Image (cartoon, rainbow, N blue to C red; front, side, top):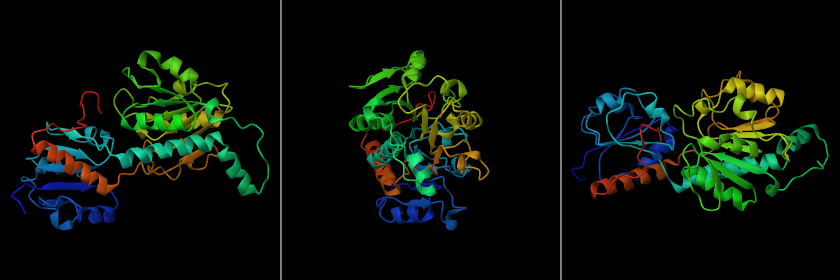
Amino acid sequence: MSGKRPVVIDLRFARESVVSALRSAFPDRPVIDMGDAANAERDLTDAEFAVVWKPDPALFRRATGLRAIFSGGAGVDHILSAYELPDLPIVRFVDRSLTDRMSEWVIWQCLHHLRNGIAYASQQRERVWHEIAEQPEARDVTVGVMGLGVLGADAVRKLKVMGFDVIGWSRRAKSIEGLETFDAANLEAFLGRTDILVGLLPLTDDTRGIYDRALYSRLRRTGPLGGPIFLNAGRGGSQNETELIACLADGTLKAASLDVFEKEPLDPESPLWSMPNVIVTPHAAAASDVRALFRHVEAQIARLESGLPLEFVVDRVSGY
């Protein structure tokens, strides 16, 4: 093995997936796996890079020689909001597999609501054979995507392939070929056109609690689905869950598909579990493939060592 300094791994993922992926990862440098009890008290001052997802709070105090921190997911709020961090580059996980998985979840949920999936699932449980007469086409439905980063831009393209009318919103103006986009100054117009709202925003001071009653009430109410529908696979902290539940109960929202929550795991007592117009998935829309994550980190380290800048570095001011 070369004289390269170690990479430290502290990932709150399924243990077996991390162990399996590490068998073929980082062949040219030492690895310190913090999931291995033997490393609990190990000196980390020689570690050069850290790959983390909700790591031990002491990690950054112990690993004082780091050159960069790699997030184990597309989001970085789990690091920015919970730790005193050294002044180092923080790199988001961007990978085809993660992007594809997110788009698959978004399309699945949009089609589920388009094709009366909740109603037909209920009929199946009750053994009712009844075709719902009103069946709009995808082209009749406007999907508004909030968040036009890597994940949002890919979801937009694939939703358009499925035939949906798609519009996009981001806080700062963005230009995406073939897509009508809106910025912060035009949120009202964006919401007024939207039948299915897709939340793919990062969690920042500006987006915390952005999905609330005031926002839901401005969605289009005269569309072909009989009321607005909310999908959130971005960050749980962006939704006001109390107001979300109330809006689902009183008809402000017709339905919702939720993959992220204010507190995870979702409390067993949460009404969201049993609401008939809600689909819950356990933060599984775009689960990180650990092998792909390590390939991404290896590629970024190689760039750094060859004199090239890191990609996907987080702007700490904007939070993404």
